[in-house]
Structures are given as C-alpha cells and as structure tokens.
Length: 249
Image (cartoon, rainbow, N blue to C red):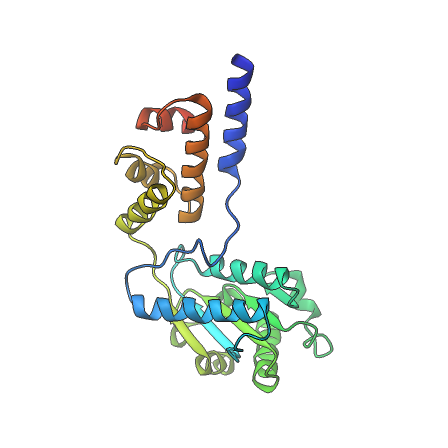
C-alpha cells in the first residue's frame, strides 16, 4: 500500500507539471467585448478547418494582429495555430523576439513558409523589425502567405517603425482581455460538471488565489485531482488539495 501511494503521488506530480497543449478548444473567452472575441475565434477556426481540408472555404487572410495584456491568451492562440498547422502539414514558422530564426529570413527564405506566427512584436529588435517588415510586404503581395502577430497594445501605441504599424493596421485587429476571477471559477466549475467531477465550491477560488497558472493548466489540474482522488478513494476537499499541493505552489 505504501508503494502504491508513493507511485500515485509521483504520477500526480507529473500530471500537474505538464501543462496541456494549447488549442482553440481549450481557450476560454472573456465576457468583455464578447462579440469581437467570438469573431476572432470564428476566424481562427475557419482557418484551421481550411488547413484540415482545403476543400473547405478559404478565409483568404493576409495579416491578423491580436493584442492585449499579459495573461490574455495571445501566446496560447499562436501556439494553438502552430500545432494545428504542423498537424495538417502546413509550412509554418513561429517567431518571437530573440529567436535565431530571424537571421534566416532574408529575401531568399521569405517564401519557404506559408504561415508566420510572431509573438510580442512590440519587443522586436531593429534587425528583427526589418525582417518583419519584409514579411508584411510579402503577405500583401502573395495571397498564400499569412501572418498572425501579437503585441501588448493597440497598433497606434506600439513602439515600432511607422511603416510596420501601418501594415499591421491594414490587417484585421483584435483585442483580447484577461479573464476575471469569477470567469475562471465559472469555467472551472463548468468543466468539472460536464465531466462529472464533484468538489466543494471553495476549491476553485482557492486554486485561483494560490496556484498561479493559466486557465488551461488549472483545468488540467482539476483532471489530475480527480484521477488522484479515484486512485486513493478520497474525496476532493480543500484539505485534500492543500495536502497534495503544499510542496508544489
């Protein structure tokens, strides 16, 4: 019994240390500016559907700029698109400030990929901005190239070259908002209810206050807690959760 408990505890530790792979399906929208957010998700899903089956309608996108504060889910969406593109064998390139890939984006390599996903454009260095501008030009001239970029602020407030800002503004712009605690609690409880996982109402607020992670990881933690609860035949209570996480927070 001791050996089994130790094994279960080790597996639980592994479960909570591995964050779930970002996807469009596990991205939770904020209630603020819901119409715009739903439009963004619809656009991204139509793009993925086209990648999955080119006979589906082509959204014919060139440039998408998504902006919002840290924790609003910008990187989540970019990585979700990256995974979807790779799974569907769509040539894609994920870039961020400081990435070594910037040095390969000269004129001869611009057309190697069809999808460019660029995170945190407001932190790009001067040489990276030069490559980024050339990419933006290519996206306008080649209908098969798509650029999805993110930043912390609206285009007009970015510390970027004016020609880059102008190109980004010409694309489709969306603002993301961070989730309020009550939205996170509701999302966690709805997830648990849909899967028949039961726990006291004080669990979700406690996790949000003490377990500083993104919502997909919190939901993954709920799954791990449920699995561990079934293995140990113990109910999910606040004491149960505190005991399991006391060395991991």
